Every structure is written in structure tokens, then in C-alpha cells.
Length: 217
Image (cartoon, rainbow, N blue to C red; front, side, top):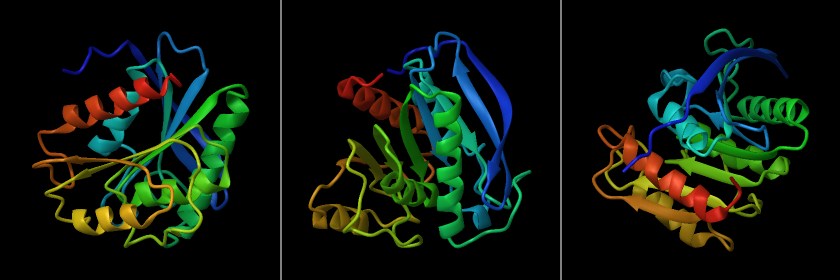
């Protein structure tokens, strides 16, 4: 069962991105000491994906449950973020800009990275380029955004996939994971579709339990 969340303060932020200002929201638990920060990437910008997506919000809440602050942001061209859609390449640079901003704001913090769908694939790409302590990807769209199987993040990595996902093929994801030399920890959730309808608390429970086992937060 999911635990009650600590009081959260949400505040807007404007982050300098490579193609314009990126709109962001910081979700900061009352008891956060700034030692652990998570950056969360949202689903496909051209299919309604934004930082207010319910899975993205639940990922933020999962980190908040362990007193870690979370940074949700809109990719270029979404909401009030400047720029235009850039096939996953530009969005990877957006994620890197947010990671760099978070590292400057909390210089001693352990950085985690998470993402859902398109944002999950972007998070994998960005996680290779920066030092991150934990990576959480939910139904990563590895067929929509090019992800190299040869160059992957070296940090502890959790991949969560619903076995009834109608947009990201569960069998394809499992085959891809099995092909990797250093695969992520894969959790397949039975009866779960792409958007985790009715199963968001299950998602949170899996993430919180994994983070707790990692003892980073």
C-alpha cells in the first residue's frame, strides 16, 4: 500500500535550454534537505505529452515520498517552453540542460533521472552523458527514439513495463533488455496498459520499493 506523501511545495522555474527557455515545476517535500534530486522526462510532445502527465506526476511523487525533490519540465515547444520538436535529439539536449541546472542549484545532490514513454527513451540517452545515481524508465519508447544498446547508463537502473501496453510493445522491450550486456532491472506489471489506468499506485509502490532497496534516498 502506498504511504501518505509528505507535504509538498510546488514552485515554477524557468530553465535556460539549448533552444529557448524551458518551463519547469519543482516539487519539493517539506523535509527535503536537497541531497537527492530527480529530473523527470515526459511523453511524446506531438501526442499530448507534457510535464503534467499523470505518470510523470506519479514518478515525481515516488521520489517525493522519500523526501527527494523532483523537477518536472516541458520539452521544447511544449507549454511555455521555447523551440520546436526535434525528433528526440533536441529533447535529449533539453534533458541535459535541466540536469545541469539541477546540479548547479543543488551542487552536492545525488541526481536521479526518470522518464515515461518517449521521455523514458530520452532519459536513457541523457543518462549516458551525465553522472546520474539512479535511472527509472517507464515503458520507454525505444522504437520511437534511437537508443544505442552499446552505450548505456552505468548506474542502477529500473525499467517498468506493463504487459498490456498497447503503444510500447512489451515483448519488444523484453527482447531488447535481454540483448543488453548490462541490462536494467525489469519489472513487468500484469494487466497494465500504457497509461497505467487504475494502476498508478502500483507504479509508485514499485519505484519507492526499488529506491529504498538502493539506499540512495
